Structure formats: structure tokens, C-alpha cells
Length: 256
Image (cartoon, rainbow, N blue to C red):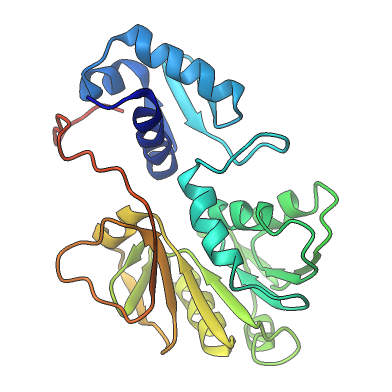
């Protein structure tokens, strides 16, 4: 059975992957009492790692003033930030993990490019030291992105990024895939225009499938957890430590 630190790291990974968890189901899977899980969630909320809700907990972004070094999403972001230099422009994929990445930039001066209204509203809610640029046109309500032919072409011109930070829901060694074709079109254009592509992906993306795929440009860097599936091979993969749950009871119809 895992000690408290390992158990809580596992809980964080589940939250990152699923968005929310149910306390009773988690207690059954981990083989501990409901009270143990309740204590874990109370302590983790006090550390700014999650938000308790009725019957469980839900994922939250890093909270200012709290130590987030143990969070797997922050560990991924910290590896990605090592590739950023002063003055760079960075295309941000429309994903909450992009906000985690920004939270780890600190005072580093750079330019953040986005065509996601959701990201834009959260990036401009505070006093970021980084410059934020909105690219895009009319809102596509199906995928929540701003889009126009001119805006897409601007990635090759006025808003050419130095770094494309992509967070695809599905990834293979040389192919990234998204669930909506417009999201794929923007990710592909950003990766094609950028000097370098960083893929910051939780490990479940390595086992997932999505319909709209494109080949990764050469020189892409994949940042993920150290539980690569059999046969996965990529020339530039950076790993964070992973706590395996192989010895835990798993069921196909587990109720989170």
C-alpha cells in the first residue's frame, strides 16, 4: 500500500487526467478507508492542490502562494519552461495546461499568443509580466477557438512564434491528434511556423485516440511522464517521475 505522499501524488494525477474524482470510488481503488481519503483531500486543499466538492474533489489550476512542486502538471510545465528564453514568442494551445505553463514562467519576459477566448480571459485577469496577444477572428462555437484565414496566415508572418506549445489529447511518436479539425489546423500551422515545437502531454495522451491527426515536425520535444507505452520511441523525450498504479485494483467500469 502506498504511503501518504505516493497516494496523494496518484490522486493529483487522476485529477489532472479526469478533472474530478469521487472519494468513495477512490478509497475502494486504493484500498484505504473513506476517512483516509477525506484527510488526504482536506490536506491537499489546504495546500492549494485541489478543490473539495460534495462527494469528492475537482482539479484546479496552481494557486499563487502555494508550493506546487509536487503537482505533475507543474512538473511537466517546469520542464517546458526550461526551453524558453527572454524575448521569445510562444503559441499556446487551447488547453488548461497552457495556464499551468504560464504560471511557471515567473517574471521571464516573453510574448504569449493565443486564439482561445477562455485562455485569453484568464491570462488577462491578473497582472502578468508577459505580453499577451490575441490572434483569431470569429468564434467557432464547436471548439471554442477564434478563427479566420488571415489570422491563421499571421502565424507565418506578424505573429510567427519561436515556440509552439502543443497539448494534444492524443499522441504517438510522430503524430499528434485533436478531436476537432480546426484545433488540428491551428496546431499544425503553429508547429510548422515555429522554430521549435514542445508537446507537453500527460501520459494518458500516449494511450488515447483522436480523429484529426498531423505529423510532428522534426525536432519536436515530447514532455511527459515516465510510463511510456511499449514501442513508443521518439528522439527527444523528456520525462518526469511517475508513480505506477499497477498494483492497485483497476476495473473497466470504475465510477469516478
